[in-house]
Structures are given as C-alpha cells and as structure tokens.
Image (tube, rainbow, N blue to C red; front, side, top):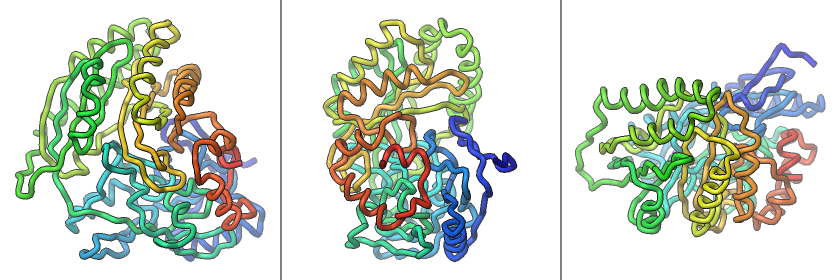
Length: 433
C-alpha cells in the first residue's frame, strides 16, 4: 500500500492512506471520478474539514476534498432558500448569508465543517424548540454509485434519507437550505451550581431560545449559556476586543491547552484544577449576529463522544456519571457539555421523533479516551442513547435497527443508490450492516 497520501482527522483519532486525493471543482468532475473508481473497483469518500472523530469519511481508495466547490449558487429572498455547493464551510457561509440578510436557524459551537459534512453527520446545536442543521435541508444533489447526478427535493420518496445521509448514499454536491431572516442573539453566560441547574432545568430549556450548560467533573460547578433572539431594532453590542481575547483566546484556548498538558501527566491534580477553573468563570452578556454567538474558537485538540437521549433521562444520566467519577475510575479534565433539541422527521437524525438532551464527553488528545468513553457509552445506551454519527462510539447496525424507526428504509435507499458499495468503508459497514 502506498503511504504517499496520508489523511488524518482533526482529533487525530483516524488515519488512512488513500490511493489518491482529488480536488474536483464541479459536479461533472465528481461524477467522472466516481465512474472511474467504480470501474476500477475502488471506494470513494468525500471529506470536509475532517472534524468527525469517527472513521465515517475514511478510505484507502479515492478521497475527495470538495474545498474548490465552495460557492453560493443561488438564493431566493422571498422564500429565504439558498442553494450552495457542498464544500462550502460554515465559516465561509455564515457571513455570506448575513450579507444577504439571512441566517441558519441553529448552529453548533464550531464552524470549520463543510455544509455537506455538517448535514451528513447530524451537527445540531441547541434549542428546546429547534432542530439540527439537517432539518433545514430542503434539497440535496448527489452523485450516486453509477455516477448519475440525482436531485432529491421535498416530496421525493428518498427525501427523508437524503437530508442526513452519512455519506452512504452518494457524494453530496449541492445542498438547498431553508434559512431565516438574519437575527441578533442576546448572549448571557454565568456560573451556576449543577443542582440548581437541574432543579430549574425545564424552565431553562423552555424559557430560552437556546440553552446549554457545561459541568466540570469532580465538582458541582457548571457554566450555563442562554442565547435569545432580540426585538427588531436592538443595537448590536458585541464583546469588547480585550474581553474576547481574554476569555475566548487566552483562557479558553492558550491557557487551557497548557493546563491540559500538565494534568495529562499529573492526573491526581485534575479535581482541584477543575474546581479552580470553574471558579474563574465569570458572567458576561453581549448582543451579536447569531453566528458570532453560536460559534466559539476551539484550538485545543480533543476526542469526543456524544449521545442523544430522551430529555427526561438527563438527571439520571448525570447521576450515573457522577457515581462513576466518585468511584475513582478516572479523573477527567474536560467539562461535560449538555444541549437540547426538539424532535424532527429526518430519518437518521439523533432527534428523529424524540425531544432530546445531548450529553458530550471529551478527552484531551494526549490522554487515552477508551475507558472513559466506554463507561459513558454504557450509561448512555441504558437510556436509549443515539450517538452522534461523527463522534466516537462502538455500536453497530443491530443496535441502530432498534433505535431508528426508519433504519430499514434508509438501508433500502442505500441498496438502490449504491448497490456496489462504492461509498462504503468499515465504519458504514458496521453501523449500517
């Protein structure tokens, strides 16, 4: 096997050696590459920002980077719909949408991902009455296993499968998104004891457009974030330059990286360091464009597992994690992130037909994540957990067939669009059968 080409994901949890790495600039070029690969018996996978912690995009065949396909192709002001090339990143797209007076209704907390990658793995953000990005998809163009270019819009029999495709149905080349008028968010962040968060949880989720919190393991300390839309005409009041540098660059990234390097070797220090770190968190408020509020800078590398569970399960899930920490199995430096979304109708969405809480566990890139993530997965699956498709888990098709009502329908669409499994890999073989 040639090792001339090496692909490694952002979290350094997956590495492969593709036969070739291609940078197509058009749908026609993607189609031609797929046809050649199919004729040669090679696998083809597309990759965006490589932000998935799983091997969902990995291949030793032909790897497609769609970074040259990064334009807005059309927008309709009346309907607020925008058609984009699949390789455009959220980082590129958000300010361009804002210039058009538009925005995505919800976003996750980072933005390097390509649009195709974000919708195909189920990037979701938070909001008790809101949905993940895939629910904003109203049209998908993809290149199928025989190189055909297929447009799937609302009303098509495969629409429910195409909005979150796992990269299993074909190469997504264009996406049409249902946007909303651009909006400002009032961000309010402050520390709150974890017992108080859980006591007020229903109100915090229901009374805020977007609510999430971070819990510092080995403590009862949490940071809550409430982001709410403001009345039209409200003045934009972003964070000052110094406060942004202090909080989001120095403390959250530079100093946090240094701290994690130390405690990766001195793990007995972690409970005390977590308590000190949580105590340093101070309240802040600001008003800014929605995407500037949603998105944070993340330069400290880590690995992550995240599961969606019925919202009412959250107190029990956190209690079991607390017990695991209390038993002395392992000291964990990264906060646990908790978010919420409403039920949607996207076939393979973690929120399909269910209001969810999301619990995400992280481990610093220089520390072994296996034992912690395995223990967390055992807790999450006991509450019907559905793992984020781009984050670490060890579950297979047998489990997912029980957790997704449309699982069999999705696999049937895959059989029709990619019968030769040109777009498969070991990860998809495991999770889809």
